Amino acid sequence: MNENIKQVSAVLNPPVPQMVGDGFRVHNFFPSGYKLQMSPFFLLDYNAKIQFSARNEPRGVGVHPHRGFETVTIAYHGAVAHHDSAGNSGVIYPGGVQWMTAASGILHKEYHEEAFSKMGGAFQMVQLWVNLPAKDKMSKPKYQALSQASIAKHELPDQSGLVEVIAGEYQGTKGTASTFTPMHVYHLRLHKDGKASFNFPADFNTAFMVIEGEIKVNNFSIAKADQLVYFKNEGEEIAVEGIQHSVVLILSGAPIHEPITHYGPFLMNKPEEIQQAIADYNQGRFGYLEE
Ligand code: MN
Image 1 (tube, rainbow, N blue to C red):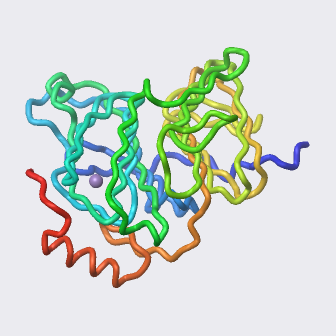
Image 2 (tube, rainbow, N blue to C red; image 1 turned 30 degrees about the vertical axis):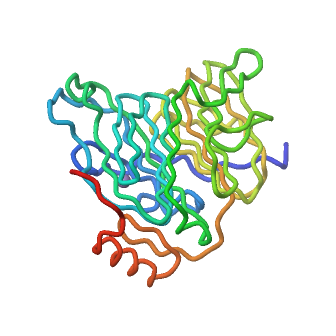
Image 3 (cartoon, helix red, strand yellow; image 1 turned 90 degrees about the vertical axis):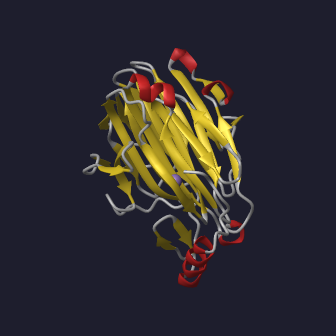
């Protein structure tokens, strides 16, 4: 028995979904669904695959602010259009990632992309909130648009599949997105019977979101699409096997050991910083964005 295995703590079912605006039907795995230690990842909203009917007026969420963290939006089916007050806009297509650093503050809106909305169809996506350390919370907003084609790829041996290195590093392949604190974010695309192994420091908070298919972890735990595999902060090595062809979002990051105060779309360290965010928002200091 290998004593350096990072053991599975739990395989979690998706919590009851809630609507975000009228365009996102999300299962919040954390922080409200389950109390998980996942810093620097603060929030995981998972829109399990659902069908949207065709509609001329795109569904989504209107203009709202963020401060103190990053939103990372990933599309699996359908397409999400984004506009923000820093002047950035773009469309996230399947396999693509939008890494938006709200930091000192932005306004943005998130909608189904127009052509997708008109056609309707399957929709599946993830939004993560990645916390920033105190020293970077008030830094300049930033925007990284990563198409699937632009994301660094690492071929697994024996035609097992592919690791797309969104951020961090996997076996020498450096991630495409830059981050403020150490973390690894991958898409694992594993063929049936394909194998992959991972090595993350014991103290890194780690979870696997199964997007598609079914996997076996550490030769023992079975997890299927829409389940989250949550790991203990012990050991380093994880072995994964594809029971079917599978897609897995892999998250592992160094915790930020700082106090957190969360209020709605703001994530700061101290209550007075939340008050400041509300005051700045009310005074129009987050810029301007048309509805
Ligand atoms: Mn938002």
